[in-house]
Amino acid sequence: MAEQKTVTYEDIMADLKAGKYAPVYYLMGEESYYIDKISDYIAEHALAPEERDFNQTVVFGSDVTAAQVADVARRYPMMAERQVVIVKEAQNIKQTDQLEKYFKQPSPQTVLVLCHKNGSIDGRKREYVKAVKAAGVLFESKKLRDRDLPAFIERYLRERQVSIDPKSTQLISDFIGADLSRLTSELDKVIISLPQEDRRVNPQVVEDQIGVSKDFNSFELRDAIVNRNVFKANQIIKYFDNNPKAGSIYSFLPMLFNYFQNLMIAYYAPKRQSQEGVAEWLELRSPWAAKDYMTGMRNFTAMKVMQIISKIREIDAKSKGLDNPNTPPGELMKELIFYILH
Image (cartoon, rainbow, N blue to C red; front, side, top):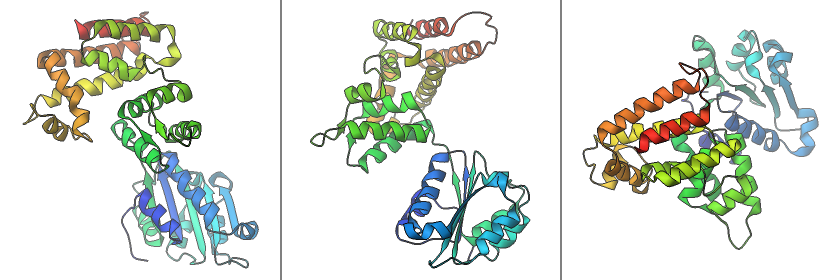
């Protein structure tokens, strides 16, 4: 098989759903969600239920050698078109020489899936990587960036015929973060809760099903800061002080840093007077997403933004114990909000 470039999750799933199975799948990376989705699909669809007892093998890398995996992969299927061999925690296989040898001549009647989570193949093993690509599919599952989470949420729900407004998307994104396994689990819970006649997610649904207050959350805090609403910002901070599980300085600091960092960049946009121009400059998904930056440029000078970024770094260091023997996180957050708004 000719050497191929690393493919995307969507590429792989499209082929699998079309019944096209490669002899080898090496699934690696920091994001376990996509690795699990691909390996689970192969386990559930590559063989008929009655074929699995004799033709589907699941092992763990710490329990087998490369030679044992290669031997199993070379077996002939029993009364089936193919056999499936899934190796979980494949990174724990110590010596890979025999696997590399197998990759150079894989069995066309075997679908071998190696799941390598929380890491990737050692970059020095160039021949090993080359052999994997030649044998089948090498896929790296990367963590989604925070800015890509809203698009992921919208797409996930749209594929299930559910709509969501931008505020609800941001609430879920900020509250759950980039743990896609947890995120999709929470989204599934939301989907199940929706009545058949109204398949829309709004802030009230998010509050009821996920537990994010529609009035006191990171989205509303950022909105209060952008609009310099001192009273509302202090209300939200007080709420967090009394409800630590609702939010903390450790989740809000990255959010505020990202906003003010982008706001600083927005000042250099060639068309900064235009919402569309700022959106294009910041590589935002839509002009709507640039609204907060247009407001921010009206409410904060470029010099103040630079000072705020410096203050956020100072508070971040203090929250980690640097030059801060005893100030609690809640007080640090109050100090930062006061500095930003005054």
